[in-house]
Image (cartoon, rainbow, N blue to C red; front, side, top):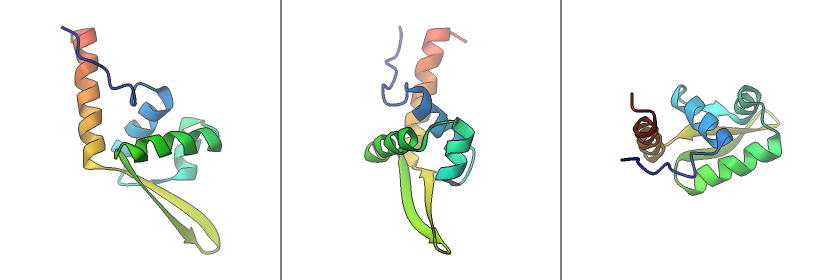
Length: 94
């Protein structure tokens, strides 16, 4: 029996962002953009979807005079990611 894949995490960019945030305590917007190869506009839109779902926290601060957007995965995001991986396993039968 196949488990349903979370459509929010099934997007390539959102899945990449979640995977990246799982491996670090937090990451800034520029780092995530560089690692994923996303455009700033697309990344911003996808981060907002993840934020609205409660999967990531986004905080905006300044480093000197430059704006800095920091992102971190939430416990709810970790759980959703783990459930997504388990659902994937039901398809590939490891």
